[in-house]
Length: 140
Image (cartoon, rainbow, N blue to C red; front, side, top):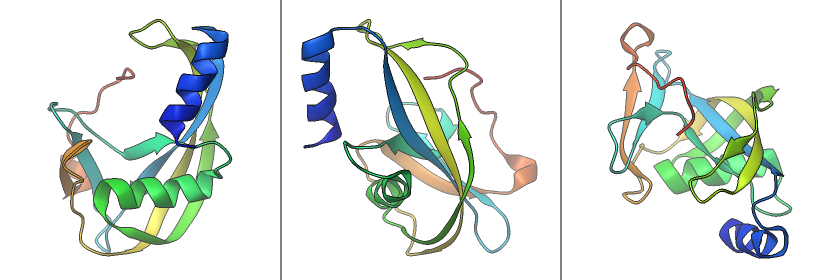
């Protein structure tokens, strides 16, 4: 079952009550130490490649799937940095409540050429650390 189907079925049973969600964020660096950032479709905001785990999927598998789906890169070496917990209960625009936990990974081994999926992401670019775009401080 897909993540969307799982969440839709779960919400049909529990409504907007809070649930725990787990996802991943990928800090992908090139051999020069530049960080790969993604610009979301229909947005001027840059951020990390990230996504939610599907039912029964490990964070490591989620990392590899999301990176490949969104950038066409294949992860060959990644290390878990930290499991980040929610600062507060979040609420989606439709009123659904959730706590999001994020497994942050440093990806140093990958192959392929970054290509945005054209659906979720409009652009991918490696940025020197000194020139990183200003990232939003709130969740989108």
